[in-house]
Length: 377
Figure 1: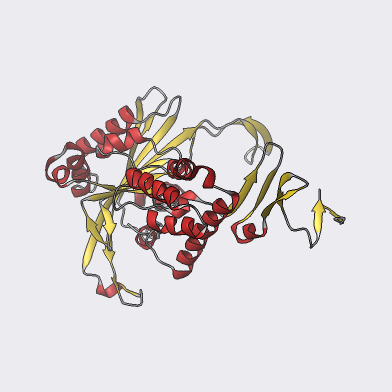
Figure 2: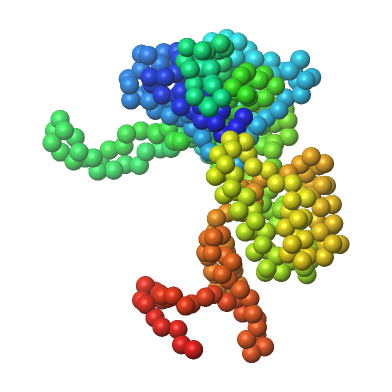
């Protein structure tokens, strides 16, 4: 699923737009025990309560593809006859009304998910979307809908104990220490099934959500989908750095690292300007071209390409957004310099009186602890 398709579904999850009839779920304590079930008609809930439930479900479709949102692909064999796909299909076909399937899903999550000393709520809902026809200019026409996309959303939300605080009670016009009870936090994990690819149903894919890219909870992905978890964004960044370090060796100079950072950020900015909804991918060969322009030796470039092919496969690519940030950071044992990618080219290296230095232009106003100072000759 690309960013536009995800956004199209996310915009539906508002009180006036969705077709969700029931909110299902359960409250799980820190001992992995279900202490309460939820089965409420959305129309019967107070407006504020319904809005909160929808918000927690909508967060399953938030974040960035390949960072917070991961495409999960099922094999043909799984779709044809696997327990994991059969469970999701049972929920999908019944609009989550299959009580046995719901209980199986709850237990699958509870037994797999590693959240020590944490209470949490599992929320589950099914929606149906009359997909409007979209013209060549991306304009949608509600009357031209020719298909219905039905899907299931599941959210896992940690529950935190409310802290006692001094609160005002209007009925007595007095302040008292009080706690409002446990609070359902923001969605930490979740998934959508089936995928909404090319604005149509794709039973061969699901979309997995993790609030923190560094905490995908691979154990849950394995339990729900029986597939290897995608490499997390921090892991992608660490792998890329290791490739550069190991393959380039002494050729990995300040100028080479600077060129790689600038080029990848340039690609990210151009991708945004083009408004391309598909995630940006850069091939190892494109990174090798940057290294070539930075005067890295052919042998080192070849070593980098071999390492990339081994890690990513023949058709694999890098996700620049997971490798670099807008910040350009330089760190020594005593000093840390941070700027944006836009101005990183102004920073140079040089040797002064036999010592190596990182040089920062100081021709314009310079502030030291907020105080303007003059730089001597």
